[in-house]
Length: 319
Image 1 (spheres, rainbow, N blue to C red):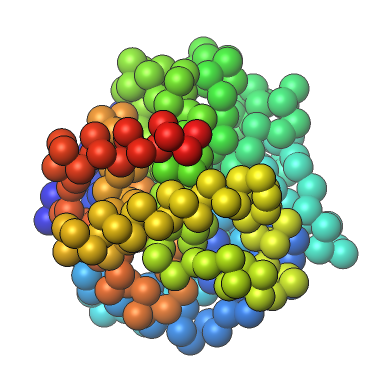
Image 2 (cartoon, helix red, strand yellow):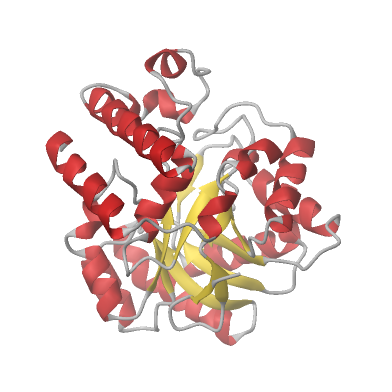
């Protein structure tokens, strides 16, 4: 199984990792609606059996529930344990309202809570989820660096930071990784972020490589219109006009290419993300064991030059 070194760390990760956002379940602001925990655990086991060696979650997913499901799945798994990555900064109050905090005391408490929910002594990669509030990113990053020195976490990274913010925190401590959104429907990071992280040897864990389900081959206008009201995508610009028509055209192209090359649309979409030399790995959300079969080929499937060029050329016509 091919593995890649993540940034400045000693972590060697598979090309795709398990994304645990949706398994947080319902009842919070960015839910994917109902989710059966037993199915989630079976999905995680199926992905690990296929050879995936890392899981990415966050404290805020399900207001702690995703971390608990990940822990339960790993406790009941008899095979090799994967790396576990999680995030801080998105906390919540007693009413379940999400708050954005980068103060040292809050992050320390979040870290302890995540260690407890995950049932681990050390977090393999601890990440700042969002650079908010911007004025506190230095304090937040300094706290992560201290947690690493104390052995609470092995490596530290960030998510959703821009280049200016990366430069600011790099003066405090080395950055192992950046987690940005990246897919055929979201290419904003290509202009500045990817060149910068490549120049600094910062690993990239691209999230939503299938466009939050848009590029899986299963998304249609009718399905989008019938999404449950508590599915966060009903409020997302990528699933509304004027972007929706463009994104569905891209999805149709991915389906066309997938049929021709004998892969699933999801595998083609993920391979397109992995084609970029700055990308270390892609975070792939799974909710059922059946979904694993549709993405596991991404562990080794890579686009040939002609197919990559075809997709890139098509994307310029729908931009």
